[in-house]
Length: 229
Image (cartoon, rainbow, N blue to C red; front, side):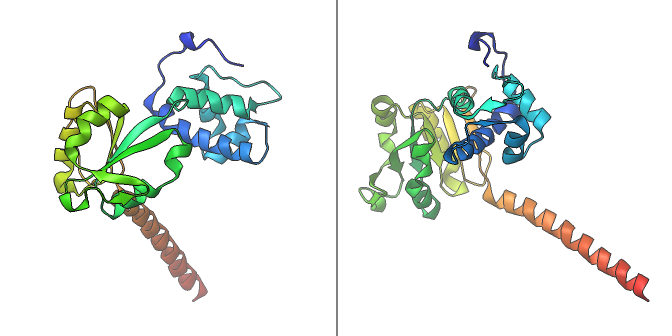
């Protein structure tokens, strides 16, 4: 069951960050032919507690049906609509190094509501080369991409040294949403949203947890050796 969308309150950022995980889990259920799920099943698939999931979904006006749970297709549509994924968002990828190549070839964009309309690079040697079916264009085509293609999101896949300059050019052309893969913090004016994906930071966090597990295991071995004496 769903409440009137006009009556919804603002959705907290933390909830918005979890909605893609719920959508991913629901897509998995749908692919297996499952038509309804309980909050416990959906929470387990998304890696959260069921109480948190129910609170998150209440912000969408979705409460499920007692004894039945959530209708998979309907809830997936609700979340897709809330995330703005019921339409295609034109995306440009800037920086055609190894990461840019990989992102350009990633087929998952098209299945998740995003359409890559342009690949850009400042290196003139790359211009007119074709990657994943699209030509590499110069940066000065940005304004026309915003006007003609409705470019909405810019993906920065450049080295850190040039990321701010690229960001400034995107913003100057009218792009208001940026996904940054460069290992740096971007300065943007009010009204521009930036999401940062820092792979090295994520690896460092994993290294921290690996170290903790290793130390705990070594501690257990030391205790066992003392007890065995």
